[in-house]
Image (tube, rainbow, N blue to C red):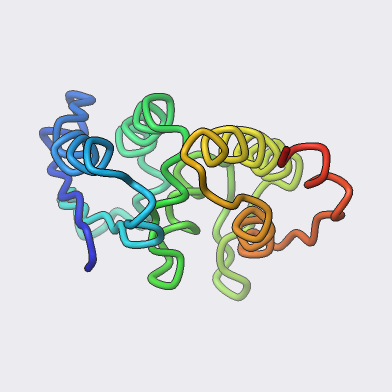
Length: 158
């Protein structure tokens, strides 16, 4: 079952997290582990046809996602990676540029910091939820282009 968070420009401009809370709070109450990689965002943010920016380049949109991430730092667990939601979510939080030939180009240092922060957050959160973390965290890192050493996971996933 795919879960959707529908965002309007009003919610984005006012930093209103209620569209996300309406979807996430019931999941927290019933047990969130059953919803792994099932969350997508639908973003309705009208802009001028001459505006070449991607949504992740619009400050109001990015700021909403920064706020969301501060409230739900474990959200990557729920994102539908196959539908590209992890890449889009990461682009909202990590400085990047778009290349017409190579697509999104993350700032390498910022992406490393983001990745390691999420590894630590997710490892602790998954442990608190009774979820096996190491294979999921390895997959998360690989989705962002990293092959992390097994030794790191023995330190983090206890």
